[in-house]
Image 1 (cartoon, rainbow, N blue to C red):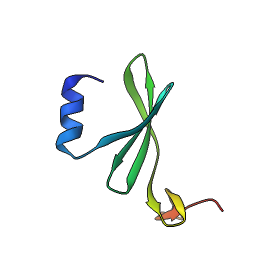
Image 2: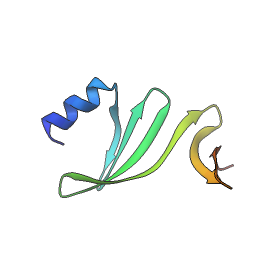
Image 3: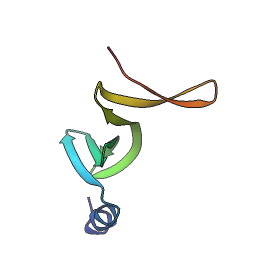
Image 4: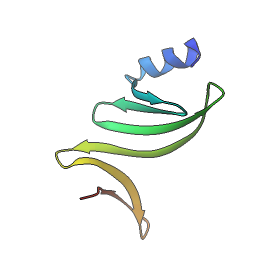
Length: 72
């Protein structure tokens, strides 16, 4: 991550919550987003969601409506 990107994320109160081989998980409050990386660059934003009392709930679209869904 370049210093410019890190500064822009910090200005928006976004932090890296976890990092693994080719993915980073970003967090802002209870909101989370999984982002794919390749060759040190962010290439695509994957799943996003919110942390609830039942675990991580993902944003999904059903019949044109945004909903939160979780497993279990």
